[in-house]
Image 1 (cartoon, rainbow, N blue to C red):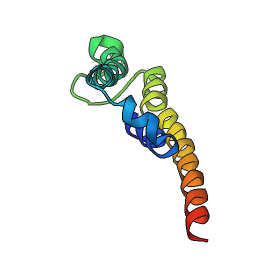
Image 2 (cartoon, rainbow, N blue to C red):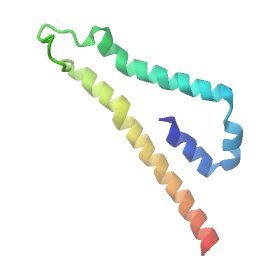
Image 3 (cartoon, rainbow, N blue to C red):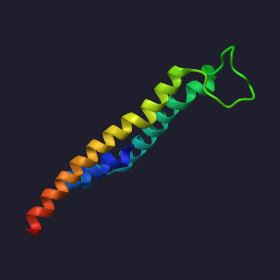
Image 4 (cartoon, one colour):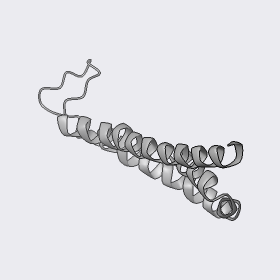
Length: 102
């Protein structure tokens, strides 16, 4: 998730990006990614999927809310943010290319 954000900063503000990288921020980013992953995966591991209609031999999700929550938070929302930021990067690169080569 953080990769496209760092690319956006590196392309749109290259001088700020050089100051942006440090060990504290790297460890904070790693911790944030693990915390988000745990927040997405832990509810199902802690028993959210245990219902009376669950068959213990089947590997299936029985909680529809979890399916919506996990798919939104792990795919759809990051995908929308990523497409928006990559579009912004494309606009900056297009202006840079046009300015220097035409």
